[in-house]
Image (cartoon, rainbow, N blue to C red):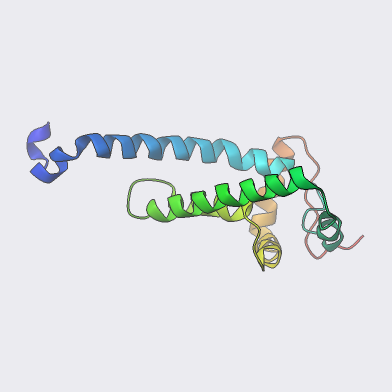
Length: 142
């Protein structure tokens, strides 16, 4: 079976095997992780008053968690970018990384994405399957 492969690929067959294994692992993790994250979001996640409540000072441990979350998000964005050139779920990995990170304009970007009827419908379908109340539309004010 290896006769038809170019010599350059045969020289790196171990690396290619590991890249394929990592690709499958990231795909499975993303398939499992996305529904968990969506179902754990509070129903009012896209509401302005929810964001304002998060701005209160939470202390040293919360600051450490935020820094760790941003570092992990950055690593996932870089890994997702690399997956454009090697096997893997590049876009999905980058989106998960961006979701973890804090940066200016992130909330606006999330709201704009969640305003799309197909996106909100899909997220609420996942939440319904998990037995969780649906997300409120970003334009909804209570």
